[in-house]
Image 1 (cartoon, rainbow, N blue to C red):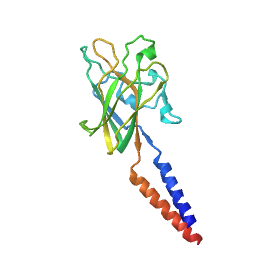
Image 2: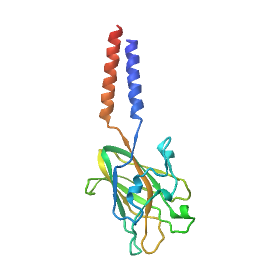
Image 3: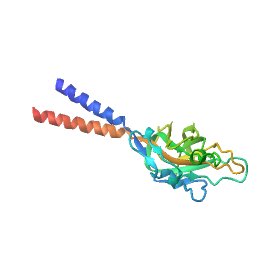
Image 4: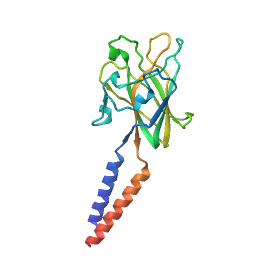
Length: 216
């Protein structure tokens, strides 16, 4: 009886350990509503300039020489919200979005206007980019120095999604006209589906029971 309890506690400890782990998702593709020539949205998914050792919260990005995304800007003094449609490559439940913002002030010592992204909303979407359930929102801080650390925001990952639309509602830009906005890198965090844990627990229990019977 005692050994059975020990085995069951071992199984439970293993399952709880696994459930605490999250997966960092690099989307397979991204499409922007506008892009300035030479600064494509594909840079958001690049690993160039990224330090990715240790916890994701400590990951950094080195600077503009490794590529950024910049919107095409406008022709008036009114900011036009920009959208980014991410394809995660699979359906997952999301818990966080990690954003590495970018500022020309930090990179070029104020030779350029500040074009950091500011306020944003995150939505579940489909391949066509139609807005679905709101997953979260946030306000990005301005970047003041290099290397750039990420900013993490919680998402409501109740339902699994494959496409995510990020709407950048505002920027810190003071440029006139146009109001460009830019970002360096974007990643998401997902938690494996609960059914994975159920299967793992069932398999471990079966193995332990089999081993126990063989020893008897």
